[in-house]
Amino acid sequence: MSALTIFSDNDARQPLWQSRDAEAIRQQLAEIGVRFERWRADRPLSASPAAEEVLAAYQHEIDKLVAEKGYQSWDVISMRADHPQRAELRTKFLVEHTHGEDEVRFFVEGAGLFCLHLNGKIFQILCEKEDLISVPAGTAHWFDMGPEPNFTAIRLFDNPEGWVARFTGDKIADAYPKLA
Figure 1: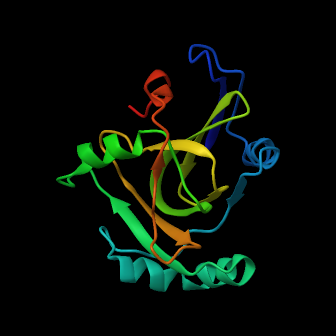
Figure 2: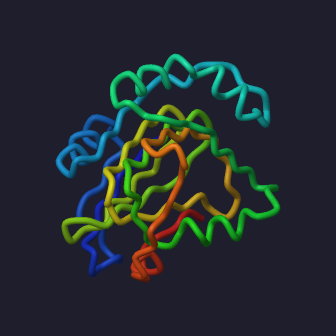
Figure 3: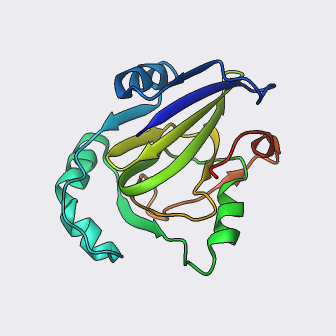
């Protein structure tokens, strides 16, 4: 089940606010310009679906977002616990960074933890199957896929080059809870 936990950006010990209610999460995130929606991820996929299979199954959802926001490219990121580079990739994504475009993800399987750093707070959003999140361009954040990752998400981009990170150099991510 999706969850949002909000911390002060100078105290990782005590949450300021927590909820698993999708509407409460949507409202909290809308206040900071983050789009959060629950969609239907109801297309059958194989045990380890290839990108082409995922894109074909959800092309109708991609088409809606492209029509609405004009995205230029999309792909699939899928990570499993047996991926040989999972530890290196987790380490890379756990470093605070920004993007020059919105970071849009639609989770069709599994879960991941987006952590946003803005307005003096840390917003930790546990995104699971059927969650759509769009983090605005320029928002400092990191992503935790956990030590045993298991997720598949469709990524949409304004930039045809795809995922381009600008690392902030801030070590704040080290202080906040991670997926076990």
